[in-house]
Image (cartoon, rainbow, N blue to C red):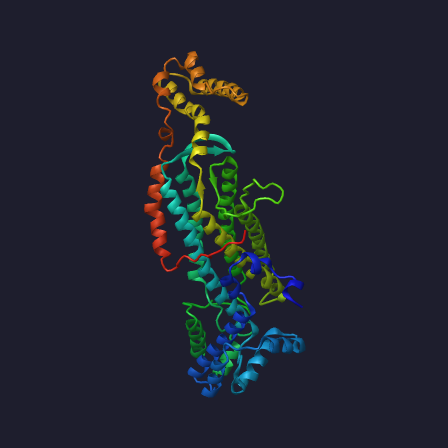
Length: 479
């Protein structure tokens, strides 16, 4: 059956990157299992078990050339995936066959491999997060002082700056990066724990020598670059680890959806647009349209990823005693799909953040339309300082503003400030002087300074901690 005739995950074939798809591939998993079996045998030999060097040499010779079709043949017969791999590896390395998987349970390879893959996948995502952060940082710094309308309830509220709004997106992604870095760096190994986590089989192999069993556990973990293995497991590592990781991935999905949703609103306003290719088609029926398709896809993938988090939470809650198998099929689906979705989201987010298009003319026109409304807060403060009642003045402004909004809707000019100047409630305010101060930059508060302080302070410290995670971007993004 060809690929076109069978269902394939679109996260692997369309949205996620080849790098992430390779990490979750059957070939990579098989290689990882074989490296785990080799590390176990090497440490067992080092600690005194009579495993011949020839067995290790044959294992080393066949770490990368597994015949997956032969594995499938064995699995159809044995109905057990790990045993199928053991048989296939033993056929290629017959000297090692008597010692393969010695004292281990299936979770030795399945769980440890999952942790290895997730560690690498988290590192890949951290590189992508750095790329998003750097792109948004540069945009925020470039436009840190450019005034724009700020909204609450998607209604004009006050002014902010384009850079300050971008810095809000940036801060969310920075929080995600800090969380994923912590997850990656404290991720433990399952280690060498045996069938129910008691290490009884290894204690038997080493003649009751507890110190050697402890050293075996430590040595295998160190062979894969883990500082520690879990002190306690059942047959599997606690599924709370999966839940914590998917919480982190769902967190970055939330940040991406917020960024993408804001961008969709701003593109509707005509102020900030996502990038578009020269020949990109917005609609099959409406050739003039330029739709925010990347932002919309980020929202779609984020929704899916946020929902996947529940799988890990439910699985962690449902485990029986030392182990049950109702986690297996769910984890085979939810873990790779979650990482592929996160990867796809961040590839899109990098592409969008690095190519944001600002329409300053539209932004200025929108500012001019609402500036009289924006100035009312200053009028309110000055009138109170002149002895007025804040609540009564607030009602006067509200009444005039509603009336003016209706007039503006009919195409008439915005004369709100003139109306307030004629109102006796504002007799103590120098209306002429205030009208001359309608320069938008006077109404952005500390937005410019806040961007600078954040970028030069907390963000710079975070990027220094993330220095080992180089940004990774894809040359092309499917539209």
